[in-house]
Length: 281
Ligand SMILES: Cc1cc2nc3c(=O)[nH]c(=O)nc-3n(C[C@H](O)[C@H](O)[C@H](O)COP(=O)(O)OP(=O)(O)OC[C@H]3O[C@@H](n4cnc5c(N)ncnc54)[C@H](O)[C@@H]3O)c2cc1C
Ligand code: FES
Image (cartoon, rainbow, N blue to C red; front, side, top):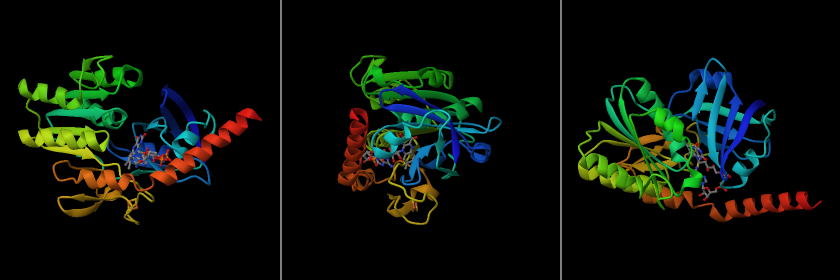
């Protein structure tokens, strides 16, 4: 059992959870993730390590409440316990030697990209962050991101905060204004990563993406997380989650991520019905 030190709502569907897990906190590096099981009947879900404190022995994740497992996770109070947390998993991002980077985050992807921007910034690289959100109500980590870069370009799809537009618009404007990036790191919904990669390919800029296929064990034993990269099959949990974005088959990723949609919806309905019964009792 692992002590949950905080489980704070950041916006209506985003929660930050800090867990006491000293062994993971000691070894964690940017780009790695954990697999969490809320209770003993729960499924294993992968969440990126968004922060770690080796001295304090804690690990932080930021998650969106999108289905039954994440909704249940959000119910654990500070002082409660998680059944399992396993990690750090996956290969750490390769960040050494980078002098100028654009870190592009879409929605919750900003929480996943933030540790990488922070690491690069702390190690002397020049970092631009391009962060996109649907609207102003779901902006997260604005102050943290601003402190982890030279230049934060905040965009909203509807223009309710920052510039109006998509992250591709923000990135293109910076490149066209003369920014010379060694690498673009992009994390967000697969469709957004696909379009950023299409743009950077035109400009010939190396681009790294973080893949988010369905995972089960997270240790390379099942292939549930397989993705096609440059025509080869890779296991995102052990070969990634970072990959060369220009080689990834995003359409296949999106198709595979939709495979259990009916079962996910069913589970989510059961959870909501149980909550309603509890409420009416
Ligand atoms: C390496 C890795 C790191 C991740 N890091 C984070 C993170 O830091 N924060 C976070 O909120 N989410 C992260 N995810 C996604 C997270 O694992 C899923 O949102 C979670 O498993 C959903 O579980 P659920 O039962 O609540 O929802 P479900 O009912 O299982 O799914 C609800 C919806 O979410 C989609 N979904 C399910 N699994 C995934 C998945 N693996 N990736 C993308 N969409 C999915 C489904 O297609 C469906 O539309 C990560 C995924 C991977 C593979
Ligand atoms: S999740 Fe099983 S091999 Fe990656």
